[in-house]
Image (cartoon, rainbow over all chains, first blue to last red; front, side, top):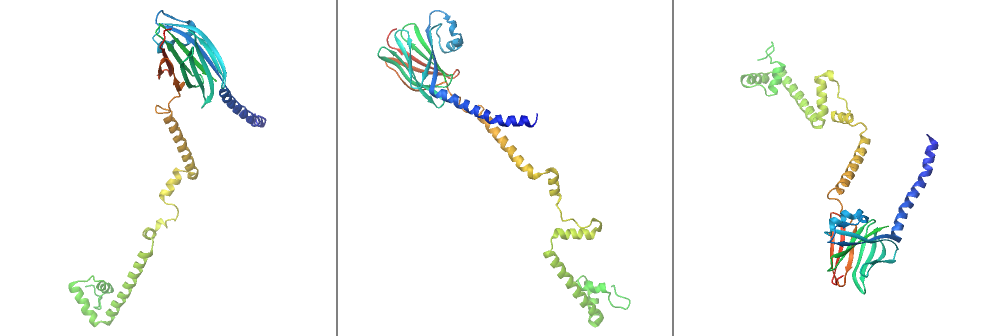
Amino acid sequence: MGRPFRRATVSTLPVLLALGFSLVFAVNASGASRANVSVRVIEASSSGDRIDPKLSDIKAKLSAQFRFSSYVLKSSRRLSLAQGSAQTVALPESRVLDITYLGDKGGRAEFRVKIMRGNAVTLNTKLTLKNGGEFLTVVSSKGPKSLILTIKASF
Amino acid sequence: MGNREDGHPSRELIERYHDGELEGAARAEVEGHLEGCPECTSCLEEAAVIGEALRTGIDHAVGSEDLDRLWGGIAYSVEPGRGVVPAGPGLFDRLRDALMPGGRLLRPALAAAAAVILCVAILLRTGGEDGPVPERQCIVESIDTEEATLVLLHAEATDTTILWLIEEEVI
């Protein structure tokens, strides 16, 4: 190795730098224009003793946060939201989950999340999630069962 | 008394009389001789002139001369074998040059090392227990509800945010 190697290194260095910078800006651009949201609808109950195997990845989290003895996965959806667009997810008992991707906010994804039942807006919240961030929503009534919604974003 | 064989006081005695070193009978004897002896009086006057000249020279030397150099000159005169002390760097200067070769380059290097150490210390400090607070997965900006009771929970240990809605109607 000698001068030919050195010349090759010098000539490729600007290319590598340009590629690196373009990758950085590409990641930021995808985070700003689009967000992927995974939604899981879980029926939780204090009767029974069963944890759905499809929930094995969050079994520990569920056990740590709640005192329910039974968890059953009712549905799972993956949404791809462009900035400013909204999509809905059907929930048990005529409820609807409505998610709007508002855009990038300081490197976080901003969403508006609504839960509606008929004409009533049971929940209307605006929040931000970091990439891979998640939050839970529990909907309980006077019955023995509750709904647990896990909403996770990636961008 | 220290007189010469011809009865005149010796030159040394006259000089001692001039310097005020004679007392009592010895002084009186010299004074008595000087009154009648022009030769010894001339010798006394000569001693006075020489003595004045010597004092003037010493005063001038002490007032204007660098005493360090004066000491070096005296040392040389006392110990001729030492020779004249050279006018180069002293002991401290020689030690400094011996312990810090290339001192001109060492100073910026030390400054750079200190800056690096300071930066590392700052990074360690801010990344430690008192460092910046981790960013939460979920930050709720606004929340509203109808026909339900809402409880907002956050588990710090797992960084889990839970919005718990308690509907008023029976499912």
